Amino acid sequence: MSKHEAEILWTAGAGEDFLAGRYSRVHEIRFDGGATVNASASPSVVRAPWSDAAAVDPEEMFVASLSSCHMLWFLDFARRAGVAVRAYHDRAEGTLGKDAAGAVAMTDVVLRPEVDCDADPATLATLHEKAHHACFIANSVKTAVRVEPL
Image (cartoon, rainbow, N blue to C red; front, side, top):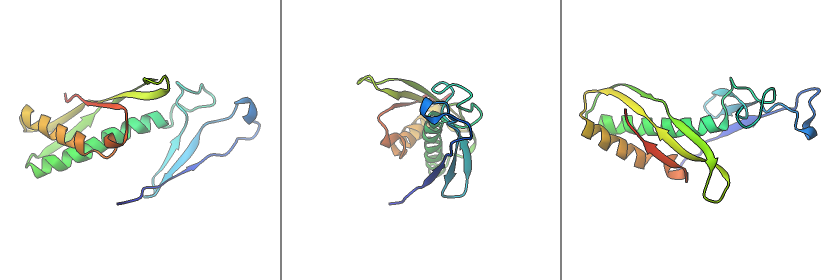
């Protein structure tokens, strides 16, 4: 099918004590299309100053990838159905907790898409259902992913 690449770059900072755990988790992610993102461990996992709340963290990227994938499929299915979408907004939320085996995992992701279009609620529900089942990312994870359109 296709390959997708990301390059992760991290360097220990001068004066940091790596072996004692006192080192920055801030790093850079370079994507194959040229985008570069500042990234870090989540401040909820690694306290400042060893993390950066302004940088994107893996948990946020996970939630965003599910939301983005769903949106892209939704827009495609809406277009195919003749539904003109004017805007799409989602405030997706992921919950980090313990799974059934006791491992820390993203246990739940809720997508809350709000779509500006003239489709009726039943059509929107059908489009969201189709998008959810087509989403490559949702099909790749064991996390419960719920779609709760607004």
